[in-house]
Image 1 (cartoon, rainbow, N blue to C red):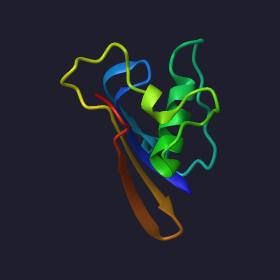
Image 2 (image 1 turned 60 degrees about the horizontal axis):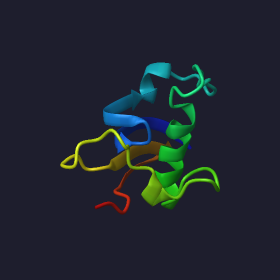
Image 3 (image 1 turned 120 degrees about the horizontal axis):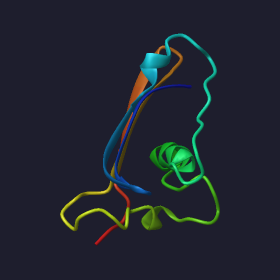
Image 4 (image 1 turned 180 degrees about the horizontal axis):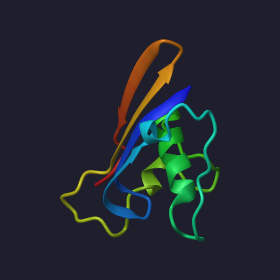
Length: 99
């Protein structure tokens, strides 16, 4: 699987929309997600796992707990993940349970 694009909206610590374009990495088969403590590294992995499986990457958080506490009440929490697997491209759109 090769990630292409990830959009987080009102997910984890991100109150707005964050887009990650993995195509900017080119053909590199490996990449590093780095940053200071609390910068959202695990949230990226949680979002990918949520898109694929409907659950977060760890056992400490459930998908319905991933809504940002900082998001406005009218902002929809959602994750869009695009990736390739072999010669096929997939686009997943998940919306966790929310008020």
